[in-house]
Length: 476
Figure (cartoon, rainbow, N blue to C red):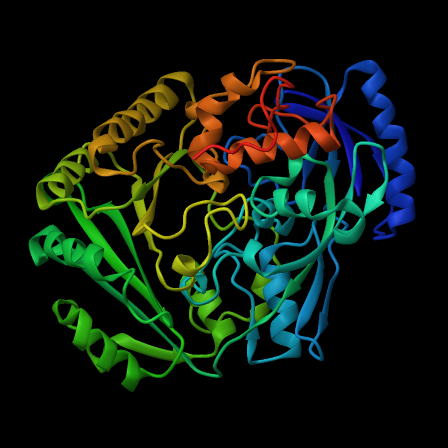
């Protein structure tokens, strides 16, 4: 673990311990950090450093970073099909550790190996097993957390309210999560991957339109996402739709399912690749065929660029006219992406109040919008950020309403930010209900109970619940 002291874009390391996962060492250091409360210093916790808005390592006034990079062990227990994973581990390290112990176990976590487990899981977390097993947070059994008093608590000692809150509500509002105990899930020895790509000229619009009607209703073993991007340049520029799929089974059954529900895709045997589940992780992430599993241990990101992202949830299929309006806007940019992840399956079976993550039954799919640029600068940043904001504005009639929902792991400060100091509940509600819907009030209730002075806070941390609001009444 290292602890750093920073001011907005740069930080100065002030303490660095040896590579130790000892909770006693961690707690001893933390008691010193908590003394920072007397000096008005905030704490930011970093597990992988992938917060979309940099909240784990950026702030405009002096602050302390608790970097969990050396708190990263993963222990697999196949007898009870569980794993204990520390918050500084990456998704890749978790995947790798599972694969070394079993070829028939996995975990429904995200796609990008360098992302830290701590932040990803505490905000919900999903990947290609979403429709079969739900979120990462749906498969958590226990957690260890350091609270505002410097005490290490587990599920039993923290209580069910706090345990509920950290499984989708964002751990940074409630303490420092040290580790998770998770339930491993069963995967077949053989899975099948497909990638079929079409341009507008090849009928991409009709395929995306049909996908919207069937993707959430397919067998839960089948996950088909759509990635929209721009290819070519000049007069050859066009919109390109890739249908990326992982099926928990062999080619023969996959083709039968696709031909029954989505024959327009034109799936052929030669489009399919059978592999192990852990190989599908590499496949879906974009690694080359033949890359060793050890690439999952690389904590460096595959892609480095400047970007801005936003998110939406779709509850009714977007019309062809609506899709064509998206394509028109895409053709005005260069490095732009729209990633559409299907829901349904297990996600429809879990109540939206089971965890703070509320986007369950009724959500056809999630959208992540992303614009990237290579050269930083005020002019370039303003241009690209303006573009994605205009796309977001255009999408308003086609996405969820009251509230217009968003996903916490696709952090977006455009939705609203807390004031420096203590933002009121009513002010924070502007962005809070977008991430959490009716669960936002319960999160504020938990926050008020376990951190009444709002020590753990950031630009989008859970606020305190005013005494004038009844704690036992929840928003719809």
